[in-house]
Length: 247
Ligand SMILES: NC(=O)c1ccc[n+]([C@@H]2O[C@H](COP(=O)([O-])OP(=O)(O)OC[C@H]3O[C@@H](n4cnc5c(N)ncnc54)[C@H](O)[C@@H]3O)[C@@H](O)[C@H]2O)c1
Image (cartoon, rainbow, N blue to C red; front, side):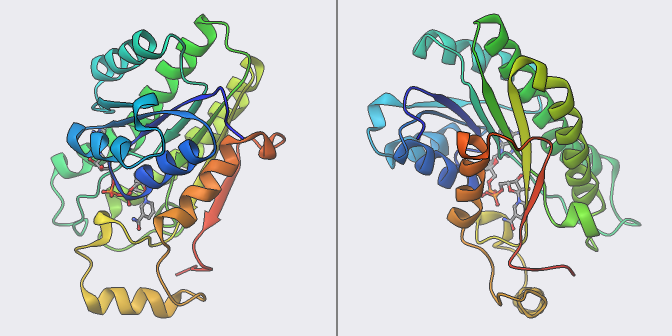
């Protein structure tokens, strides 16, 4: 399905990003796993089919220079820019609004929202400069970005921003042959939710019609679909992968 395509996956060392890397590699793509944690990105590459054909990169998505350096070194190593981009890097710094400090608010906006912007901009610029014919971007929002979530005023705002960014990028980038969509996951079994207390976890499961958290692969398969030509008439869409959760 992705034979001959190069894919850049940010957060490639994390739960959902790693699952995306593996699925894209399984389906024939050459994958660049990029993560702030370069060792985790290397572990991802080593866990993939044909590890020598893929690339692990250290990248801070919140830093323009780091993003541009990452795209440059990928171009040097693979001799072509990525035409598929999955923006799966993300962080939480949860606290109630009245207790949240400015840094916790800004850090989350910087990684989750600005990072999605910077990576999309740099990757699509490289694609256009190298005469790439078509591309696809998939972003990761969250159900918190649609319905809010107590203790996540920063995170929910960043993820609502990702939906709006996706719609706008889709409208602007159609003319250069790039589709842009996003997934809106519910709670997913990754390191990000390891600290959720049992009481909260059980409450969330009760609110989820499918009565469990998602496995990262269940989100990643939808992301792979949105990157593939199977979704060729989709752009600007936000696809919920929540097990029916609507808190
Ligand atoms: N797990 C969930 O329940 C859930 C639900 C909805 C949305 N999401 C979103 O899915 C995405 C993936 O999250 P996950 O659950 O796999 O979490 P995770 O913590 O397992 O993975 C996130 C990865 O992003 C990397 N990262 C953090 N800051 C970075 C930066 N500045 N530059 C580059 N990489 C950075 C981390 O090192 C980590 O490997 C995130 O955007 C998250 O907000 C997760």
